[in-house]
Length: 350
Image (cartoon, rainbow, N blue to C red; front, side, top):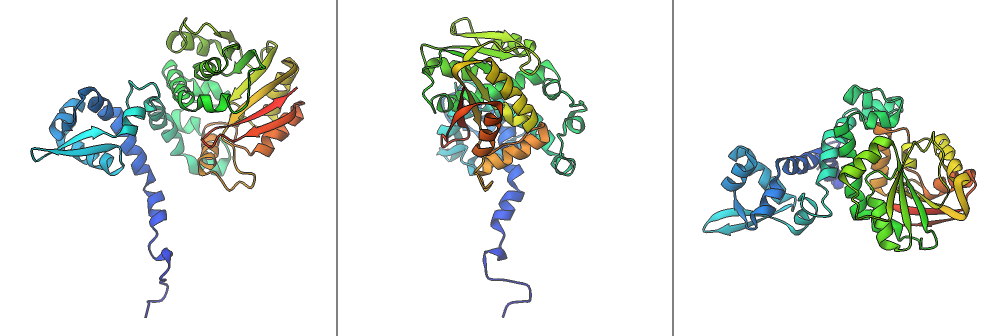
């Protein structure tokens, strides 16, 4: 006979709840391994390394390194091998591709930004939910009346954010720019184009097009210095604030991870400005992580929406909500394409 208050169901052992409760341990293990350079060290060695060699290479204690390597092995981030009775470590295939700085699709900069910036903001998630506002001032002591003044509060922070965007579009960019056939649009403006990674994916996919990155002067300066070389002859720049400055006319405007930063009112304001500048027959491509129409998922978009609460004025939305914003601005014939990955595409026509 069972004691009062017990059950024989799955609720008797809350595995899922325990996994969620301890999820931050997984994140911090990944963050720490990247920050210490574990995966870079193993990649550069071109052979499996012993515990002693890894500890020496990352300048860490042997005891701490052993525990970190064990956790990374348990997370399938490292492989272990036995050589002459000694345990040796090497990167898994995914770690080699995504967790080493030398990889062209490395996520290390995104991981560093998550660790040093996003993670600190999420410490104040409870306050964000209660107050309904972002938490930059509590996390960093920076007032956030101007969202991007807070986001770009130092050159170091701006470069870190641009590296984050660069890594995202190096992996996801081609999927969103090929979700629709954009070949009829030869003159394209990428508003808030940041590091230029999405612009580069666009000109690779459509050899006849040119893409102009429209962004703040300091972002343009940094992008020219660190991200877009003179070899990218079909990618150019235009300095400006897309809320305050005139938009040049174009066939297509790209708003990738832009509208989720802003309220509905500010989003319609920007889309209306885009509509007026857009050439007849042109359009706007909105790239965002779309929620299901009933809000039931996907989980990634739901969590991203919480992140928007912590960091911005905006939220993630459903396809119907983006359609309503585009319609309010004047766009017609709105189409939605889900890529099956994190980011989806919505195309509106003038």
